[in-house]
Picture 1 (cartoon, rainbow, N blue to C red):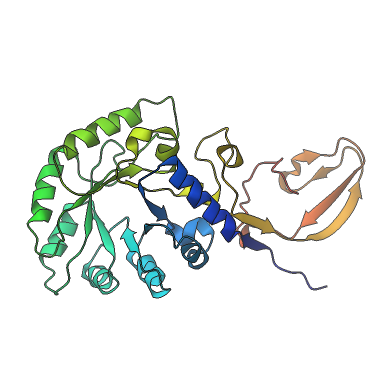
Picture 2 (cartoon, one colour; picture 1 turned 45 degrees about the vertical axis):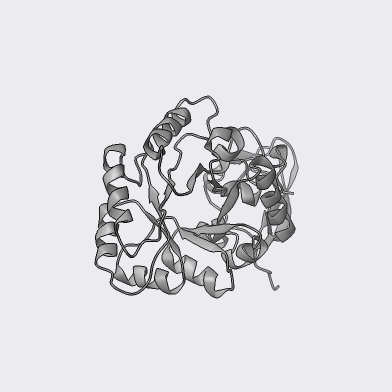
Length: 290
């Protein structure tokens, strides 16, 4: 018997609906739609086309940005992790990609890059997440150094990233905003801080650009609250078929580790879906299936 493989079905109308929800939540702000990691597994080719109405797209790596540009996206594309070597810098120049600078080695590479290409850049502040970005004491000198480079288009844009915006009760987001405000005071250039959670829960974080990611795909950034409860529509359906059905007796157990026990005589079905198809093996018992 031929078995059709599982498939992910992408609803592009839902993507556009969720982009409209972003614009309603942050009126007047420009939207940098995050499509990193193959659009969170939703297929960046499909998602980039559906989100053509965004003001910019954000990807993780230079090669992702080059691919999106080759597919015909004409608006701005920002590379969130910037570049790691001269080859990536040359590729970014060829495809007109904007670069996030978060480490001194990137400034070194820019200084030694002598091709006649100028880059729009975003300087990233580590306001408390301690993952990527210049610390507050380092930031001003990094900004001055970047501004002095003929390879950089003025003004330099400024960004940071939140650690706990998905926790409405945490004080850390307010602390990070205070650091960002202090460091950016009086500086020209656009500002960006809000991820999906910041966009929905912290209006003070909206600034000039918002950077929605997970909410564009219909997923809530908040524990205990679903995407539809926030007015979002799920973008992906994961579909498969039943390989077999069978009836088991009360007390019989099912699956690896025999972790589920039938409370009574029960019909069970086995779906064609496993970790090889992208379905995580560690999802808990009780995960709903329609």
